[in-house]
Figure 1: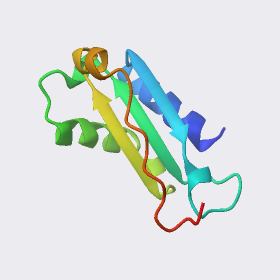
Figure 2: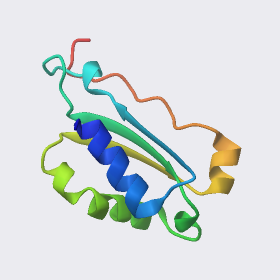
Figure 3: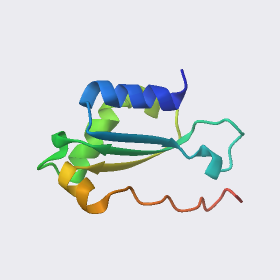
Figure 4: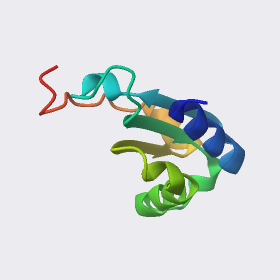
Length: 101
């Protein structure tokens, strides 16, 4: 199972989110082809209602504690259903400063 699949499954099982996107952005960085080291994660869940951003991120960090020992970077975008309806998407990731790509 790939790291992307593992992350997706763990979040899905732990939270049953209304919407989930796990994108491997490793290709945007200076890493070997096929790497799974940089991820962008969008989670839309009722569980985030009334929670500050830090609590939302801590929840995902606890769910993915094992995976965080094996990956380099994880961009988290955590939204309530109302926030998702307003924004509709996670922001694009900026280009990697040191990748040369």
